[in-house]
Image (tube, rainbow, N blue to C red):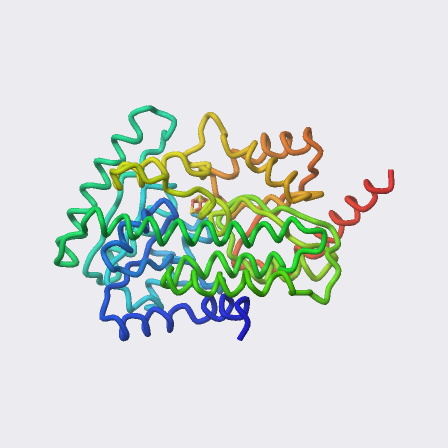
Length: 376
Ligand code: SF4
């Protein structure tokens, strides 16, 4: 099986993977709701972190528990818990994020029996000088709670091991992303997404080995397809592989992204400084921000533009999960900012109950517009 197939297989069979990991190692598995959760500490404690994501199926189990006008992604995640799809989890946790995902976490905690749960107070206003010392203190409290739960100390050495494994994973994925800059990238946007999302749910050391295999394959990999128009995708949580398949079947290749299932998750490394908790706190405070943490500076805008330029994207698809307020507030200024800098964009509103086919015509029209711009 090729490395890309292994990523896709992990993504498709993520629940089986976690169950087999538990049976093999006897370790605990924790489900996490947001990429601000410091996996370094969990890995240091010998726990497998598994990101809770939805299944993209219409569902009717969340109505009594979460408002219908909360984002479909959050409702889909909660539905997975209520339906017992994550019945192998020993614990759940969240780092303070938007209101909607917090509600999904709280409802899960209330209605799905679980041994351990933790709400980590990640500061919203990360620009404040007090954010790093504050978050370090919160991480220390979390470390103590985790130690009680796993029944053993989580030493500085353990956390340094977690940092090393996570940083290696980040470095390898960044190397893979370098190949997306080529005129004919040897991997599709779909494969890149499957690579990143699978890293959020399997043992990172195992993932690192397959990343190394992938890097060995990429120089000789030749996809039997036209690259077409190069695009960057930006916005709310997005693990919609059907959407990517559709975009890449109509004359485009997604070459870069700003998603928490992409670069926002892995781009920034922990810089070791002798105090693992402080180094981890600094990484999460300074990382490419989610809009819930990016107000009022909007530090991610120049980073998105830099990605668009470096990866030679000719246009952007801006995705908003329906009702996602943090991203919605960014869309008018982001659209103007990208447009002013030569990157036209297409805005799409996502909802798991809406078939992907309705976007096809709009994506094709957008690509046609970009093609016409090339003529002038
Ligand atoms: S998509 Fe938006 S509303 Fe939904 S969890 Fe993410 S930030 Fe929150």
